[in-house]
Length: 298
Image (tube, rainbow, N blue to C red; front, side):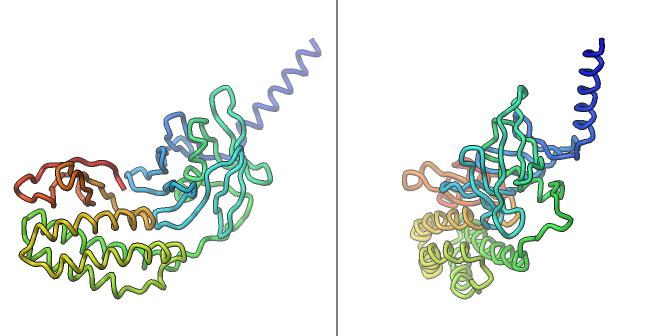
C-alpha cells in the first residue's frame, strides 16, 4: 500500500509539471503548426506557409533555410542538431528522438523546450521555428531577444514589387498580343534593373542579383527594342522569366502569392510568373490563351 502511495505521488508530480509547462508551438503529423490550440501556419516539404498561403521560409537546394526576402535564417539538421537564427547569430538546437506519438522535443542549448515537432517534419525544424517566431509565439529564456536588422526590409520589398510590376505589365501585353505595350514595359524594366541601388540589398542578395542581372537586362532590352516583332519578344520573354524565377528563389515573393506557370507547347516547354491563378498564356496570346498549368506557388 505504501509503495502504491509513493508511485501515485510521483505520477501526480510529473503530471503537474507537464500541465504547468509553458505553452509552446506544436507541429502535427500533417505539418499543421499550432500555438495554444490555434493554427498559425503550415509546413511543406520545401518550407513553411502562413495561414493566408504566403511563403514564410524556404529550403534551398544547398541545405540553407531562407526567409521570404532571401535572408539565411537557418540550416537543415545534421543528425539531431540544426541551426536557426533566433537573433543575429546562428544558434544550435537539438531534436529529441520521437515519443510513442511521433513527437520530438526541440530544445535550446540550455535544455529549454522551444517547439514540439512531429517526426515527419524533422527536416523542416528551422522552418517551424521561423513560423513560430514570425507569429510572436516562440518562447525564449531571454527577456529581450536581439532582433535582426530589418531597416532595409521595406526597401527590399519595394524594389522587388517594382521589378515584378514591370514584369507583369510585359507579361500582360504579350498575353494581349500587344507588341508596342510589351516594348514599353521591357524598356521600363531594363531602366529599373540598370539603375536601382544594390546597396539596399543584403550581401547574399547582392551577390545573387549580380549573377542574374546581365541576363535580365539583356532580355528586357531586346524586348524593348523590338516593337512589332512579337515572336522575337516572346523568345526573350522566356529567358527573362527564367531569370526572374531565379531571383524569386533568392529574394522570396515579397509577401505576394505568385504562381509559376508552364506552357508545354512553346519551345518544348516554357515557364512564366503570374500574380493570378488563372492561366493567361503570354507565349501564344489570344491564339491559345488558356494553354498551360500552374506548376507551383512561389
